[in-house]
Each structure stands twice: as C-alpha cells, then as structure tokens.
Image (cartoon, rainbow, N blue to C red; front, top):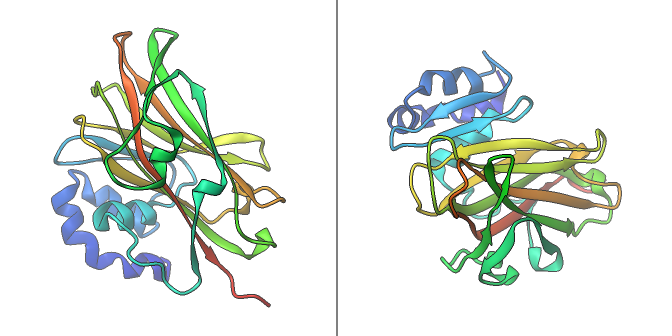
Length: 231
C-alpha cells in the first residue's frame, strides 16, 4: 500500500456515506484490487474508472470535491492559451470562453444521432507551460458539466490522448442521476499523456440513450500540473 493511499484512509467514513459499495473503493485505494471499477453513489449516479486509472484520485477528488489551493510545486494552467473544438454535434449555446471559469455560464453542445444513440463532445488541445515535459510529475483535469436528459444508460466520459499508444484513454465514465452540474476529475502521472512538445489533448464526451434531443453542457475545464523540482 502506498503512502499516498494511507493518507486517504481518514476519508473512509465519508466514503461510506457517499458510496453504496465503499468497501470496493477501499480495496481499490489500498491496492487490494486493480483494473476498472464502478462506484455507485448513494445519492444516485455511477462513477466508473477504467483499467490503469488511479482510484486514489477518485476517493480524494470525489469526497473532497476539490484539490484545495495549489500546493508547492503545483501550477494552475491557463487553458485560455489552448483551443477548444467541437468533436461531434453542434454548438447550441454559449461560447468556448464559457469553460474558463466555474460560474454556471455553460457551453452547450447539441448532441447528434450515432448508431441509435446521441453523442456530442469537445476537444481541448493545450500546450503546457513547461520547457521540459519530463518535469511533469502529474496532471489533473477538472471538468464541471451535465447532460440535459440523464438516464441510467447515459454517460459523460473523460478521455486523454495517449501519445505513445496513439489512442484516447477513457479515464472516467459517469452516469448522472439528474441535470445538475457536477464536477469530476481525472489525474494522470503518465508522461504518455503529454506529447514531447508538451501538449495535451483532452475529450469531454456525452453519450445518451435514445434519439430524443439532448445537450452536453460544459461549465468549466481546469488543468493543474505538479512539477518535479528542477535538477
């Protein structure tokens, strides 16, 4: 068991109140189980992680709801320096600058029918403010969003480009219980998710059942880096 996992054990009483299967979260955090997991919220909704995703991050971020002020060695990245593009669907409300602040002013994507489901999403491409990407110890991305027609078979997915395997790693999959904006997080300590030029590419995807009209709403995307000390 890692020291980082041990430090999160005081969160377990809160985990028991928040998650139906909190024992499984305990096993995942302490390293007694691995692979993709599904954590069911007592308030409704499901948080899914895929193989290789750090379950400690699920515990820390979901239960604390934020990372607090940036600690020493952490940099908050201005995503205004990047570009936000539509992946699938069409713009229904707001402007791309709406995602710069957590303020309930949303960017809306009208999802489009694909294979009997409604799909829509955005892609953030961002050059990180580091001259040497090898200094990046970890990367944390926070997303606040919602879908306007939630169901047990409708999901929001976060995916980060893997520049080594040339694919998008689907990190967190969440089935919202209602239309309210929620914040969820993906944390990676793998340099495979940063290009040699110091760039990241991050997708926020809405995937809804049926073919009735539905929107993906994105209120905020935040990026933080933890850097190794310079040699």
